[in-house]
Image (cartoon, rainbow, N blue to C red; front, side, top):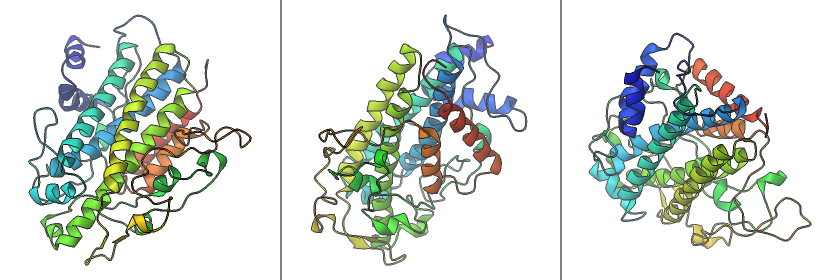
Length: 362
């Protein structure tokens, strides 16, 4: 790596995002995702399998950062820690119905995701491995609502199909997707159709029930995203070889769980309503028993490893086979990548397959 590039990696995580990644994109040829592997900056090496897992996670964290930055621009706190955007008072107020501290929580989740992908990429580079670089795919449009930056995006928050089975999964004491079990949707309407998680334009700021439905959608989407990371890190941790890489996954993964715990608590405060514009309905979740009860935010004990064992409170699922591809399929079904190129999907599929092909000692 050139001296100037090394200085970028050693500068703030914001500088890496705004300078280093852009520079990497500028030097990529057609069809290239990854920058050429830089000279190792630290002693020791990584197995190719460990590098594949870290690179896939870095790519997902990059995508996650992109979506959280969009949420922060419109509904979070804008400052030097999380740059970009100027805020949208109407959307921020609608989010505050779920919790008065939502703007701070959105900001802090965004900040955390910046640190995850910049650390993972820097660690790969320090060991002479190619980092994940998705900058060439930053082509999707921004919201035109007041407060949003007009820049290219990696993810699409304006056509979401939100799987809310995570809600019932964590409240069930007898079902676990590791055993092939399926759980019902908490918000059936969100699991069908396409719904904005942010105002697409200022036209979405009225009427008030329409804007609140968008804020409610965002609240459930926040938890959907973070429960995915909550499960993925322990799933992939079972495949790594290096003790230090295991330490990385076991250190980052629990922060995703802390995010998820926060967001599922706030999602439970989404007011019941029917959007007068789209017909999207958010039911009263406290009228239909334990599977929907809003204050059951601790994981209910459930079956684990074998049905012969007593139930145990766990993260689920944690089955490792196909975990990376499963995560990619879930995000794709979520609508996050609507409008992305065939090349984007090919690149992400290759990264996921490489991570899934890794096993301990490879």
